[in-house]
Length: 118
Image (cartoon, rainbow, N blue to C red; front, top):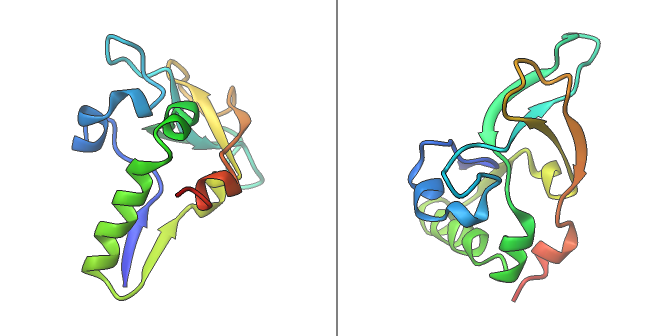
């Protein structure tokens, strides 16, 4: 079984090759990052720091990046587990300058639109 992380690291080839698909500006600086809101276990929340997706750009490209990513993993593994699949519905986005995840907000993901892509 292969674990497929939902997010890609800021310094990854995925972000470098496809900057338009991530929430970064034209100079390559992060605008919004992934995290988790404050909870019972951590009053600061969890600041993961990976760039969140630019879902409008993903949709305009018919989610081809995701389709290729999943297809490649299916060739490598009999079963894949998409870590943090929930973010297709809703995700916690934190302004990149934040030192904690407290200032984040829930944003809507692409939902079923991405799953039914051609």
